[in-house]
Length: 155
Image 1 (cartoon, rainbow, N blue to C red):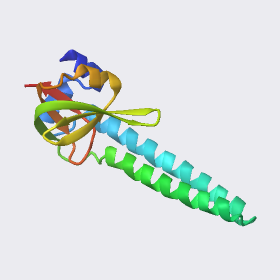
Image 2 (tube, rainbow, N blue to C red):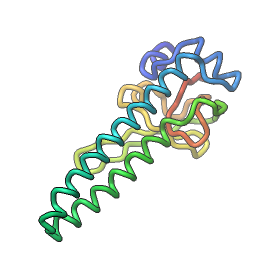
Image 3 (cartoon, rainbow, N blue to C red):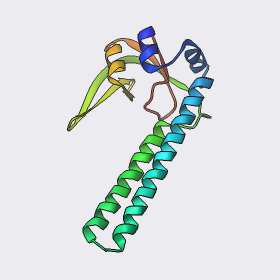
Image 4 (cartoon, helix red, strand yellow):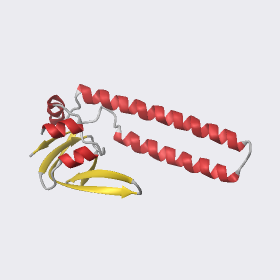
């Protein structure tokens, strides 16, 4: 179990709080920090896009206008996806128990590692992916709708 604790960065205290349906103080702090980073990146990206827009609007290059609009749409989609992973700390922790399966998605040169329990897919890093044993039963603790595992225990 310590291998999963290390790679998923949770402690026995985190696990105990998650079993009670709550985030630990440490997890609340980490999620709050992630939310601040997402908001900061959104602000910087928004300012950058606005700067590009103002720069090229004065020249009215139709191709650049299309690029700016498409990059703005991509920025909004990316921020929304990150915000989904950084769920507010007031939500109750839930658990999903069952047999684990693993799979890797590849998009060009990027690999995305996933584990699935009871039809719910979770994002993991490559080290966590290797630490999980396919076919074993696990209880995964997470926030509703979030693809991030807070803590885990082997059944």
